[in-house]
Structures are given as C-alpha cells and as structure tokens.
Image 1: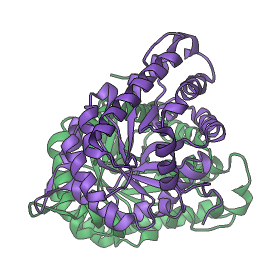
Image 2: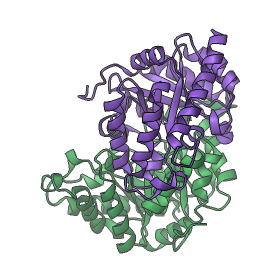
Image 3: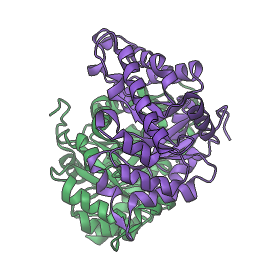
Length: 280
Length: 280
C-alpha cells in the first residue's frame, strides 16, 4: 500500500469520465522542439507551455491525456513533465492521466519504474510491455487503484514481427490479452493497448478482455479508421481511450495552435461518437 | 548519421576490451538510496559519488559498466546519471558503457528514446525490448556503431509467461534470437540478453546467434550458476558480458564499500575466467 492512492481507482475514474464527458478521445502529448510553434521553440519552459495550452483548449473534449515520456527525456525536460502532470491533476482532476512509458523490467528495477510513474509523476495509469511476464507487472499493480495498461497489438507495421507469431494456432497478442484478462487483472487495474490500424484484431481482443479499457493509438496521423475502430472496440459504457497525438497537437504551427488543436479534437470526438451511437 | 559516433563501434570495442582486460564481468550500477552506505545516503550527489567510487575501484576488472536508468529516474537524479556516464566515458574510455533502459516504442517516439540513450547519456549500447518489432529497433541502429541489446530470455521466474510460449514447436525467445541474428544484426550492432538462471537456454541462444555478444544478468544476487553460464555462453574471444549488480555494489554497507566491491568483482571475474579456460 502506498500513500499515493488515487481519489478514485483508475478503472472507476475512467468509467465516470466516459459518462460525464461523453468522449472516448485521449489526446497524446508528444512535444517535439522541432515541431513547436516558433514563438515557443526556444523558451526554457516551452514544452510545458505548449502542452498546457493544448490541455486548456481540449480538456472538456477528452476522457484522458497521455504524455509520452520519451519526448521529455530526450530533451532533459523531466522537470517540465512533472509540472505538466501536476498541472493537469490539479486543474482537471476529472481527466484520466496516462503516462506513456512502455516500461518493462523485473524485481527491484520494476519497483523503481513504478515509483517513477506513480509517485514522481503522479500518473493514474502507465503503459507497460508484457515481454518480461507477471513479476514485471506486479510492482505496478501493488499501487492499488492505479492502472497498468499492457501492450498487446501495436499500430506499427513491425508490430507483427513478434505479436503475430502463431503460438499453438493463436497469435501471440491474443495470448497476451488472455494473460492480462485472466491473471493480471484480478483487481481490475489493467487495460490493454491495441492499435487502431488493425480493427479486426481490436474486435478479437475486445471479445477476450470483456469490458476492460483498451487504449487505442493510431488514429489521426497514423491513419487508423475511426469507424472500424469504434465498431470493433467500444462498449456501451465506452471501453476505449482512442488516442490521437500529432494530428491534434500539431494541427497548426502558428500562434493559433491551441484553437486549431481544439477544432481537430472536437471533430475527432464527434466522429467517434457518431459511430458509437450507430453501433450501440 | 549522427555526430555521436563512437571512436570504435560497439562490437569492436567490446572485443578489444575482452582481449585487453581478460574479463567478461559487467558491473551493474543500480543505486538505491535505502541501500547506500550511510555516509552517502543524504548527500545531494550521493548516487554519483557512490557509483563513481565503485567504478574507480573496479574499472580494471570489468569489460563493461551497466547503469540502470530506473534507479536514477525514480529519484529525479537524471543529472547524476549524466555526470556518471560522462565520468566513465572520459576516465575509462576503454570500458564499454551499456545503458540498461529496456526501451521499446515506435516511429518518432523510438527516435527520441535513441536520442536519450546515445546523445543525452552517450551510451555505447542500450537494452531494448523486442515486443514492438523491427521498426522499434531501427531508430537505434541508425546510430552507426552504437549497440542495441535485445531482451531475449530474462532471468526472472515470470519471464516464461511470454518468452517460453511455444510458437510452431519453438519457444518464443528462440524466435526472437533468430530475428535478431538474421534480420536486425545486418550491421553487426546487436546483442541479446539471456539470464544466467537458464544456462541450457543460454547455450541454445549461443548456437542461434553465432558470436554475437550476450548480456547475461542473473549471477550474484539472483543466484545464476557461473560455471554453467560460462560453459553455455562464452566464445573463444569472450562473447558475454556477465552482469552482477547488487552482489558487488552492496558487498559492504560501510565506508569500505568500494574495496568490498572490488574484492567481490575480482572473485567473480576470476571464477568466470576459471571456467572459461576450462571450456576453451
């Protein structure tokens, strides 16, 4: 047990947020200096200011925000990520906060990664790799109420190299989905990642994991089909965090970037909801 | 091409280092505040000072050092990791420097993780997860001469959950080893991670990957058998980085921690060499 228990457990907070916001949209916060609006590019706190403006402009349109730690780490900007996480938690506590870190390690090392995600950054949930197995996930689950979102079927072409290997007639990613659903989700803390670029596989995972939350990257810049994604993965209460990063945060390279982000976020949310209503 | 090309490519540097140092030992640098000697525990630069003392005391006994980034990240100590990496590179440039980060992500995000490992921290090689496939590895390989060490068979009990799944009669970790050897290692930049706790599987991986470097965690505190490890994994020129972290760096909790670390490192190196000579 840790002192950083969330006010609401991850799964409950997400369900409540789906219901209140009527949105399955997750905005990914991937700040890259070369792509920031010129007026923010050379500012010391440029990453925070950029992300804060996106967050302020879109918070009512989303169920979740998902900062990607690599962008901060490559620029020695962990302090700005801390500030951003704290800002979101304080200002928009109803929005679910997923740290995208795809960690995967064992024993004491995994404990340190869990401490990083949940204590240092205060995330509600963190993305994890399944490759090292159950004892690489447990240190994250020991933070009761926090979420562990396990990579299952990723949206990149090379994702098939390992995830699509046939194991006794079943592709590996389905076995991972089963493992998460049947073993790792005992306390209801888990979710899975399935790319929007494979809607049929998303539908198969949905059948395996029941109503577990699915984080779905790959719409927007990566070209995933929103209709097929929503029809394959959504549940009556929501069921998905449909993530778009670049298409939203880089909608404009000018000083109007936040308004432009809002417009694309709104259109994406509405498109998701259109197919959602049709399929329910 | 990047400006951070190493003086010697990773594989060549490692081969030269095996030859000159006559050591296959890799010392893992996993500083944990609660386990530091009391006189260093509350110092602002305690992690750096602790690791520097270990490095100074053991550099002539090792082929490689392997700092584990989670320990620094959980304590907001990335700056101390930077200082440590720079110190090792400057003071002991002949020792191979592996950043243990087990990253795994796609596209632009993987590029940012590669930048973190090779530009920010100046590592010679970094550990990576294979789960996301070839395009998650490529951004690291595009740093010519740098090393990408891919998780294959890890030393933890839960490692079997995914890595030991049978895919067409072959356990997954062997298919990963084949993928690394046949596809990802085209420029000779790859290595694999195989835990010392599974010496038979280490021997199988050795047959698959030829003379590719194998990073072998799990001796020391994790209890892997050095004799079986060396007999299963070593090659005439070396072939392995046999990692020990806790058994060496925490050999004493007193002010004599560095001398104690040296004594354990020396004994471990000698034990490795004893079985190496016997098997060659």
